[in-house]
Length: 221
Image: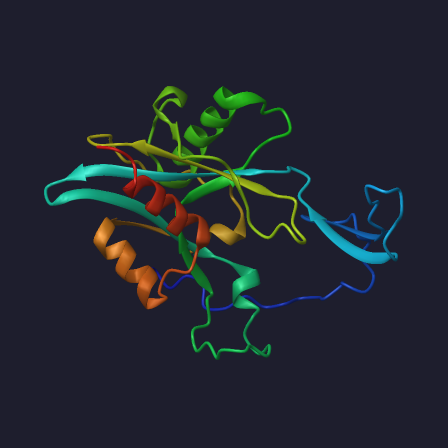
């Protein structure tokens, strides 16, 4: 049972109308653009909105272990404001769930200083300790295929998927990053079958988690 430490996110101030496009956690570029064609002609001018993170990309880690009944996978349930603030907006398909908390695998932003695959795997190992309280080395982290765009029409971010085995590793209380968004976060171990059932029911709706699980399931054994 998740500790009920957070029951809602309250908006103290909406300063959208006064904030600049480069202010905040995300950076919005509003552009007028045109297509240059092979024959030298151009399309009509049109508008583009592009959203960047100051730290461009992210890494996600499928943490797993061998249990008495087979493989078990770790998920983290945490506050997700953008999903929560869907409430009250018009949706094509009604959604009765409030999505204050969302379930997903361990993930974190890459730092500007991270360069190359070794740095990527090292960042993944750090996120596993910070969010799950499990010590692993960069050498133990394995990539799960090519990175992918989340929404390439508006977001420049790519997510790099990886996995790591933690069978027999001692677990400590995760340090976290001290953000209020980590209040009420909980960890949960589930079987592959249980996770796929949660995805099918719509209980778990995080794309990177589903894709990582499916890629892992397709790995040769």
